[in-house]
Length: 350
Image 1 (cartoon, rainbow, N blue to C red):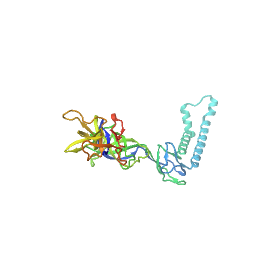
Image 2 (image 1 turned 135 degrees about the vertical axis):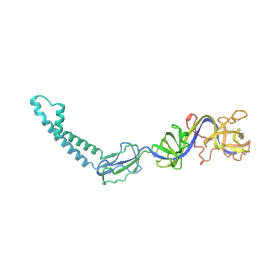
Image 3 (image 1 turned 45 degrees about the horizontal axis):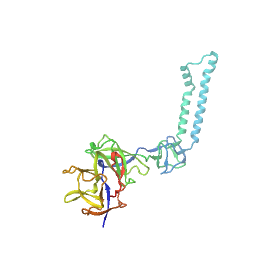
Image 4 (image 1 turned 90 degrees about the vertical axis):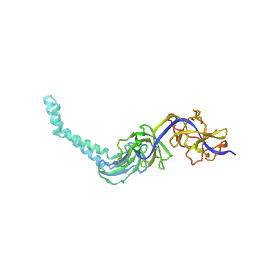
């Protein structure tokens, strides 16, 4: 009877060695909007959890006091401008000469026109600030105010979090810092990471090292989809070295018999016991080195190697390749892509 097994294809590709650490997901823009002017809340237009676009109105203050201040400042500016005109126009009509630029500035100051215009500009500025708008695309986290509440300048009104532009600040032990490569790939996973794993890019290795923890920080950039939340702790695997053009098999395909490493290769419906020489591994994939006697690698690209159901197999046992069990992650894990491209692992059939 053929035994059911799960197999994956050997392949040629890049083996990415990684530094494994932990970090915290943070948002590039977690903004707490504060009232820039004092006033009374007329309308609260959003609720916690609402998705908003940059420029969207969030809270409106009662506009009447601000409109009144603008009209008052406009009237004062008009009066000052009238005094300014009356200070030189009659004389200009008689003499036929207009005042010089310096004389105009002096007359404008004497009439109070410059100060009146500044006060009008401030009144319009405060009128515009009576409506609080979101500075970023994001999700509303908190709205600690209610309609009718009187606000003072500087009081927190709304918190908006950008859940798409994210970063991870990963702690890296000082002896691993020289290994981390800026621009390299980073994998983010953990209980709080939906979908099991996210890919990011190492943006920087920050200059300061904590002398107590003896660790520095690597900054990883990644794009969120709204499901990954800032503040969650994550496991981070940072690219340290990329070994190009290696023959790779899944690390769990390699077992030992009689003290020698081997893989089971499915050929013609049978599990062929094949001794191999493993090289370096990143915990997911392991490179196979050429045999010392023949100089050849005994597993060819595309050949299926058994990753489940092989611990008790014997050589030449009949097997049947099947789909992986639903709760395993082998079928959904993102592998190291050829030439840096990401691909999906799929069970293969002989």
